[in-house]
Length: 137
Image (cartoon, rainbow, N blue to C red; front, side):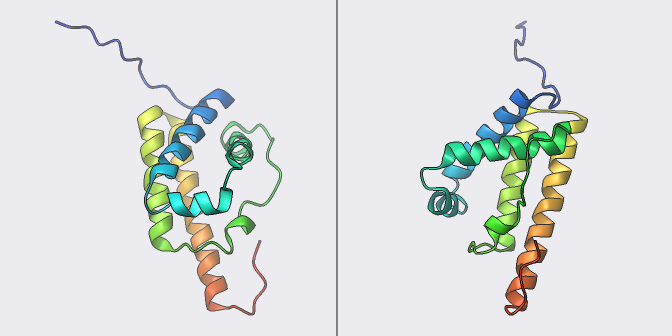
C-alpha cells in the first residue's frame, strides 16, 4: 500500500495564492492556439506589468484588499475577440482554478470570471452593433 503525499487542495486565501493562479493561467493562455497570439500581440514583452495588474485585480475582487484601481474593460475594446474567445478564456480559467484550489473563494473566482466574460462580451457586441456610440466603460 502506497501513501499519497500529494498535498490536499486548499482555497484561495492569500496574495501568494492569487499569484500562483494568475501565473499558471497566463502560462496556459500563452500556449493556447486561439488566445495566445492575441495576448502576444497586445502584451508583447510587457508580461510583468500585465501580471502585476492581474494580481491586483484578483486581490481586490477575491480578498477584498483594494489594490486595483482602473477600468478593466477599455483595454479589450479593439481586440479581435468574440464569443469563441470568451468561451476559451473561461474554460482555461476555470480549469486552472480547479487544478489548483477548492473552496468558497475558488468558486467565487470562477463565478466572477463568468460574469466578467459575459459583461465584456455583451459590451463588445453592443459596440459592434452600434459603431457610432461611445464605448460603455
